[in-house]
Image 1 (cartoon, rainbow, N blue to C red):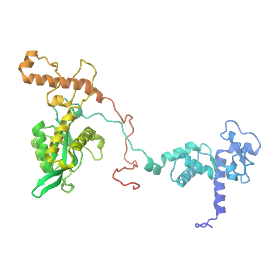
Image 2: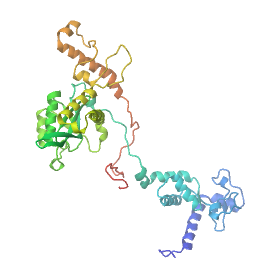
Image 3: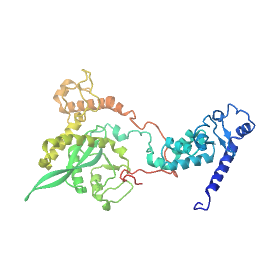
Length: 421
């Protein structure tokens, strides 16, 4: 007897009754032909299976292996139609028995139990596709078509008018004390121009907002005031999370708000968990780290001081800002390389043809006209050569339906440990 009071014979009899009802519902014409010893019509799905009726009235596979030393369930499996709820329940049951493995495992378990499911591959694939557990274990993240570029990336404003910023590090530096030397940590704030893709790096001593305000003041003093700052919602910019005051525009300390208000600058915070919106300066952080790692190999950790680290950061900015924004042309008539430093320093390695209506005499007499000609040359090539490279979507090409209210979704957290949900 089973624990629930049913005997094995009762369960087997119930299975036979259910399967027989399903077969009579879906294969009534085939059963009539077999009982009258007539051939099945060629349009029937069971025509090639040569089905037979056993002593219990169940429809089984015929075939040519009657003489094989096999069990009846192996030599003559029971036929199960796929277009009914019973077949779906059987697939779900055996799919759970194989611990949510693929179609091959599930189909093998169904066949080993003595069942022949007509059109089973399609039904199994459909059930696995709708299985919530399988989506949780191996499902892909939802994606949407890549959106249009924000207006900050397409403006012809002066450099560092629209800035994206982030903090990266730390590095251990040696500081001199009365007792000898001590180890301390330093971080760096990277400021990235959204349009020219130039960078500016400032070294900070602590992660407090007072150190960040000092770095922001140094940045504004060197590069001029910015119209807009954009960053993530990390507490690196606003201090400890307990002291944050959330509002409609995002977390921001009152001292930072007052300073930005004086500078006529706004701060836009990206939504949480939206790392794809900070790719403009996250890419620059990766490049700066690789350059800095190469520099630190030549110095070693025992000689890295705050002064040396600040010098290295300035050299990193110079190297990154000297990178070409577009592929280097092999045309001898266009030797000029379009780089961010071309606009920042107003210096190039080759002479430029004037882009404005200035005469050669004006360019020789007036320095500001030469600077203006160089700036207009940069923006003309930026519009003609660089801006067109941003037209195509490199990934996330297809547009998919957005999530609606009431949809059941599974959130993926990168900080969750393995095998935990």
